[in-house]
Image (cartoon, rainbow, N blue to C red):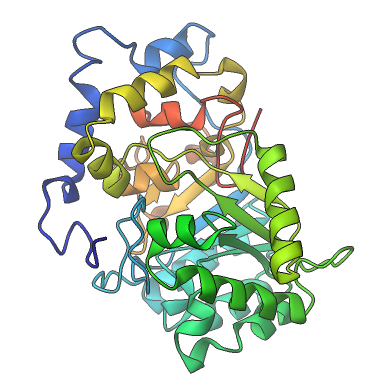
Length: 351
C-alpha cells in the first residue's frame, strides 16, 4: 500500500489534464460507450443546470494523516495545500450573504487545518444552520491535540460524517492502511460516549461506505442494516445512517483501475447502471465546492479534476450567487459515477 500521494510519487495521474484525457478518449471516443452529455441530452437535461444553492462545501486542505487507496483527493501527510485564514474570511463573507444553509467541511482531514476550529466558531456566528464535518475518524486518535474533537463537535452540534470502509478489520485496513480499523472503532466509541449516534440523539453521526474494489456498492439500506448489526454486536457502537458512495474514476482510484486493468470494465459497469432518475438530484445541482485556495467548482469531484465552474465567476472573492445560479454545470464521464444505480452523492444515494 502506498504511503505517499500520487503527487509526491510524481505519478502520471497526479496531472488532472491526463485524467481528463483518459476519461474522454479510449472506449468513449471510439464509440463503444456514450459520452455523459449525450445520455443526459436524451432526457432533456443537457446542459445540466443548478437548482437553488443549499450547500457550501469547502475543502480546507488536502493534508491528511492517512493515504487511502481509493482517495479521489489524493490526500496525504505530504500534501501541504492548506486554506489560509484570509481565504476563510472570504468564505465567511459569502456565508453571511448567501442562501446556503449547510456548511460542509472536507479535506484531507479538515481538522488538520490550523484554523479549523476558528473557522467553525466564526461560521456559527455567521448563521450556518447545519454543520457537516467529514472526518476520517483516526484523526481523533492521531495526536493529543485532536483528542477533544468529540467534545468540540458536540459544542457546535456538528453533523459528523465519518469514513468507514467496512465493519471488518481486514477490509478496512486493506483500503485505508494497517491499524486504521482499530483506531476508527476507538474514535466511534468516543463519539458515542459524548452522545453522537445514539438512538434519539440530536448529535448526528453517519458513516460512509465505498467499495474497496472495481465494483459498485450494494443496496444502501441492506448495507446499513449489516453495518449496524455488526458494529453493535461486536463493539457496542451506534450510528444513525450509512451513506453508500460509488467510487468515481478519478485520481488514486483511477490509478488503481488502470494498474489492475479494470478501467474499461468499470466504466462499462457505470454506464450500464446509469439511472436517468438520479440526474436531477446529483450534488452539483444544489452545491458549490470551494477549494483550499478559493476557486469555485460544481462539486468536489470536479475540483479534483481542475474543472472550475463555467462563466465569469470562478473565485470566492468574486462570488455572485445570481450569476452562479445561471451557469451550466461542467460535466465529463466521471459523472456516470453519480448517476449509477440509485445514484451517489456525498449524502449517499439520490434516487
